[in-house]
Length: 127
Image (cartoon, rainbow, N blue to C red; front, side, top):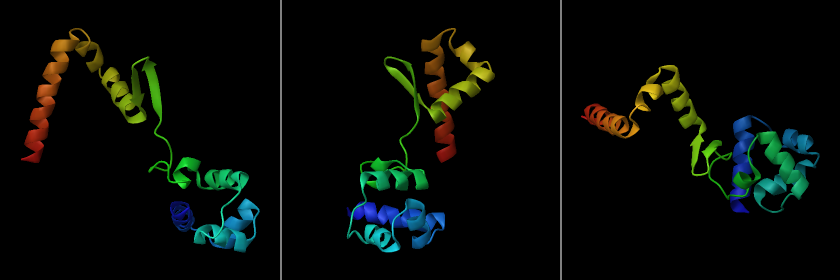
């Protein structure tokens, strides 16, 4: 549980809490909470859930199963297509500018054209 204790301590410090404040929120003793951070004891499932809620992170993050505090949000468009929140925002912006409508008139040719323009822009930016 090394990763758990490290992340727990980091989250507490980043949030500006003292150990006794978090212990009180979790309804555990200060020493019990201190043992969690030291890796000397593990919280119950109910306490683990409270910790995740307190710091607004997933339990998988606390346990080291994922590297980001929360799972990325994605939106399923079709069976084989889902978009992240950022990608959906880009599509929304393209739709607002009527760019999506124009691209969809001849998607193969227009997307190919966009890819060439984008590669050119990236190469100029990196030059």
